[in-house]
Image 1 (cartoon, rainbow, N blue to C red):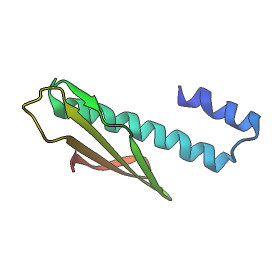
Image 2 (image 1 turned 30 degrees about the horizontal axis):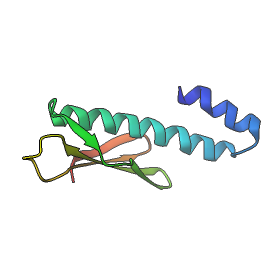
Image 3 (image 1 turned 45 degrees about the horizontal axis):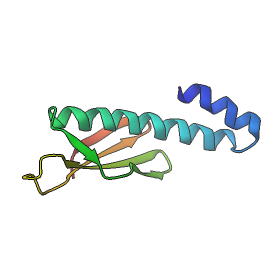
Length: 95
């Protein structure tokens, strides 16, 4: 779906090709991080605490996700982060 979104942004004149490329890479990185986060939860029911928080540093992207377990006996939120360089995940895990 991100590839369908990219031409629409260019046609609308909203973004430069570099901005579109960064947007597509951010959305792909976010989707991959969310998938890894869900795997790490092992089926634990959670409620998202907003976000994700995505930070771009040139070719590097950092994604941070937070969720609160539904079980009222689990007080601490689950926080997960992923770091990407040139599209490759270099780190993922609890933050």
